[in-house]
Each structure stands twice: as C-alpha cells, then as structure tokens.
Length: 609
Image (cartoon, rainbow, N blue to C red; front, side):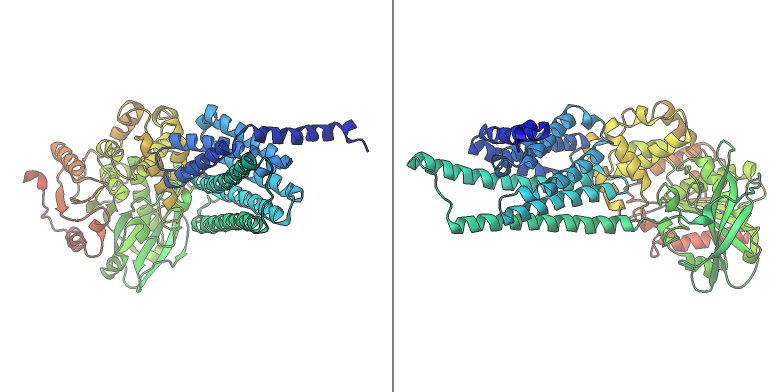
C-alpha cells in the first residue's frame, strides 16, 4: 500500500522525519544546559514557590519551554517518536503563552497546567507501543502515568491552588531535566568517540543494562512521588466540614427577627452535666434585610432560669461550612476553651454561628451590625426553646472577631433589641481598631489570610467596595481561595502557604485600603462606644495579631468618647494564650461576670486612671 497517498500518514511521516533534524540543531552540551536549566527551574518551583505569584508564573512559563525543548532534543525525538514532537511543541507553545500573557489570567493558569499534564500523560500512553525496547515502553508508560496523576491531583484540589500545581510541576520538571542531562552526556560521550576514531561505538552490554535500569528506576521514582502527592492531597482535602439539611430555610419564615425556626439535640463537645441543642432562627443584616442564622444552646441539666452567656466566637472561617455548630470542635474552634466552667456556674451558653455560617452567606465578617444582630437574635430565639429554661439575665462574651461582635452587641442593643437587656459586655482581644488592624496586616507573617477575609467580606457586603479596586490582580485568585477554607481543616496549611506566596507582592492591596470606600466602611464598622453597661476589655501584651499599641489606641478613643472601660492587659500572653485555661483572665472573667449577674454596682473605669 502506498502510504504517501494518505494525507494523514503523509503529515505524520513528514513530522517524524522532521524531528531528528530538530534534535540535531542542538549540540550535546546545549541539550545538557537545557536539562540543567530545567532542573534549576524545577527546584525553584519546589523550594522557592513563596517568592511571589508573579515570579511563580515566570518559573512555570520557562519550565514549560525547557520541557518542550528537552522533548524535541531527546532520544525519543531522534528515534522518530511522534509523541516527543507533539509534546515538545505543545509545551513550548504553552510556555510562550504563559510568559506572553496567560500568566496575567492567573486564575486560569493552574487549570491550564493541570489539563496539560493530563494530556501529556495520555499522549505518552498512546505512544508506549512505539518505544523501541521493553524498558523504554515501561519508562514511557510510567512517565505518562505520572503526568496524569499530577494533573488529576491538581484538578481534584477544591480550588486548584497555584502553589499545588507549581510544586507538582516542579517535581516533574526536575525529573525530565535530569533525564535530559543524562541523555545529553551520553550523546557527548559518543560524539567524542566518533571524533577520535571516525567511527561510531556500539554501547556495551553493561552500559546498556545500566542505562535501561536508570531510566526505569527514574520512572518508578516519579510514580512514587505522584502517588505520595495523591495521598497528601487526599488527606488535606478530606477534612473539609460539610453543611447538612438542618441549615436550610423552612417553607414558612416569620418576618420578625429572633424567632426560633428549628431545633434539635446537639452532642459534640457537650460537657458532663449539660445538654445542648442547635437552633435555626431569624435575624437581619445591617441593611435590615431578613436573614437566617444558627446557634448552639448549652444549659446545665438541672435548675431553671439560667443566666445567659451570649458567646461571640473568634474567626473559624468565612463560608457556611465553617460554622462552629458544623465543626467537630464547636466551642474550642471559636476560642471558647472553658464551656465546662460555664455549666458548673449554672449558666446557659448561647453561641451564635453568625449569619452566613451554616446558613446562606455572605457572613458579615467584621461588619458590626450583622454580627451584633446575630448575637442578640440568638438569645431571643433561644428563649423560645422551652426545654432550655433560660432566664432574663444576659452577659456578652467575645474573643477576636467575637470581641468586635460583642462590642457591637452592646452598642446596638438598646435600639435593636431592648427586650434583651444586658448586664455587661466582655471583649477579649477584640478586632476593634479596624483601621489600625488592616494597616498592620501587611507587616504580619501570614497576615494575607486575614486580609483576604476582610477583602472578601467587604466586597460581598458593600457594592462600592470592589476586588478590582483594592486587590492586585495576581493575588485575587488566592484571596478567594483563602476565604473559602475553614481554619480548622487540614487544607488551611495551604492557605498559610498562599499567604506567604504573595509576600513578594506585599501588600495584597492594589490601593490603600484605608482610603476610598473600603476605608470609609472600615471606619463605619469600628465600634464607637455608647455601651451603657459595664465593659471589660482584655488584651494580651504579646499578641502579634491584635497588637497592644493598636488596642491602647482604640481604648483611648473610647475614653475620649465618654465610654467607661475596664481595660486589663496581660504581659506575656498572645492572642490565644489570653483565653487559655491557665490565663489569669479566665478567673477574672468569671469573677467579673458573677458581679454583673449579682447586680454589684461597683465597676472599674480605666479611663479615670
């Protein structure tokens, strides 16, 4: 049969005939340099992925080009294997595209690379039968399998993190770079022998055996690396909590806030001698839009008319599945490390999840009205739970984000929920000085994680705040990814890496977040005082997140506004140490709360000192 008459075969023949000519363009030493360059790029992708996303994009683009050139100058290309030419050309085109402009669409880049790896693996799989020897077929198949596994791991990642793809692609680039160096050195050796003798030299049986063994061993090593990546990926993604049907809105929802819609017994982390429920209730956002929220109600098994501690939790994440009532550790995840002591005092605990946690989002993260209303309406709804037997006395506690929520709860209670009279507000390491805190995040290791939550929350909450105005383009995909992870899930470690990866582009903000609409909204959501009940504000002096000077500045502003504050600082305690079981604050907090519930009129006002 005359294959030249078949257009498809003619094209293939021309390509396979062209490949050896391409491979001869490069002398052996140039091929070796390309291989060394690929190894260096691969190492940089693995050990230096945290320089910046811009540099990462350049690394990936150059790695694609190096991989393509290496494929075109490989032994496979010399033996007229079609896969080498197709893959080589494909990787070069992709690398040029990344360097020329695709990198600017950085949100698309991880998906493109992951798909390219899978396609590369499939092409290698189809070309296994073309390999000249059994060991070559095994190595080709294993390298193809490695590409497919790497690509699948990347695509299976919940948000296709650029860093995950970079590390996987880095490992692949190292392997193929080493293979390129080995082939080039062997070619150089043969070329030197040809120059010296004028004839080619047959490879010895021992040398052939070692070459084949080395190629197969390298392929097996890459398969093991890819399987390890698959296992690690599975572990990191398996811990993400899931929301169940309890949090869905019923068919009929009352229009007024603070109404109990649903309740069921709750058992996770419930102390001995107590019982608990999770509840679904109505509330409102800061613009009076109706919303739903959920909460945990914890009460002693005995007694009635239990005084209420309204607990506002610290940051656990931003999305619905990060609600404390969804998490395996519902109290400790939000920094309430002593629910047992609350029960022993005979008090009830009403712990809101906030709007948008468990229920449909967005969460009013550091948006004061939405947080405070969630707290107050949780108490209202819990009082409709007759089995809980709650009393009228209520004291608010909150830590970190919850400290901000506690301050806003005290501030809006007289106008929003006069039927929930408060006896006191305790704010522990509150994220209250929003202007100072936001400016401080750029200088804080890992501060990009919190900056991402603030950016995402304010973009979601306010139409005049946009991601395009305030977040640099290269960081926007990572900002969205970091906002999607819960702080208790294993994948949070990737958020930390994401935060470090954009340190080279620090800060993440494209324009000053303290100016324009975002700055106005941050000031709008900074508590201004006007709390009519005793206020305890506690702060660790070694807190790297809520720095002591920022808290001092905030307290000074409260005093200037006429607010009475019992401000207590604790040397040597950091953000979480402040609320640890061995913290002196805990004992003082319970003493202070007993005084409020007993009606003790004596309070300390630091502003008078």
